[in-house]
Image (cartoon, rainbow, N blue to C red; front, top):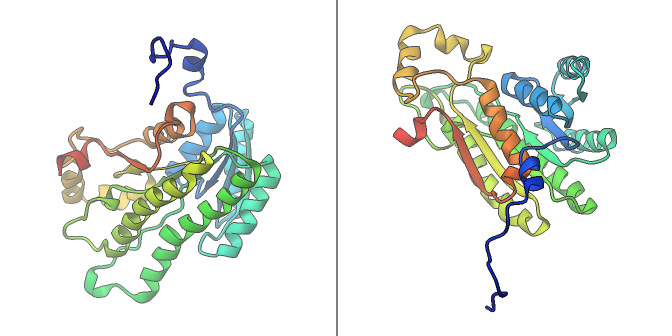
Length: 273
């Protein structure tokens, strides 16, 4: 390989520096966007100038968050989505494209947990979690990618996972949850490889327990709360905005050379196990 004469080290372009974390004007589709983490992501991205479509199974909640964002000066829309159904995913994706003129960034926040001990797991529960946590990610990505490729958009796909994509949990019934989140981690890698030729990056953000009403039942049990805090090197529960920050990084120019990666936003839990 022949190298051009002179230095290969590029000069620092301050205009590039200024744009590193700029997401203004991006069109962002956030399925599952009105949960605690999804809400933080939707509000933060809209606050920073992105246009956001929030989708979930309860239309009223999606619309209420979109209206709240509008009051704050952002641009947002709410749509209904049953992510367990491929036909519903395709319809919702088309509606999001129609509302915004395209989708630059997919932020998939869809996910549920139904805790059942191994000997008590039912087929119905396992299938529900597979359809919600893993199958939906496959077809959300497919639907958005088809539109991005047809428009020649070098887009971003960002999936919300969990530390349970890497770590099991002793003494709890997490079989279905861990299996689906672990599968999603591999889906991120495979989608990254297949979409790289189109300039589309695919990454995951995997939090541990994050402050929300969803984890209140865990925190209300002193023994389990102490267990969580003792095994967390930073010794605290994370904040939803700390997850939103990593999503914004992947969506912005700062994340342009990362694909196929899962970043654990966990206070050091996965580093220490």
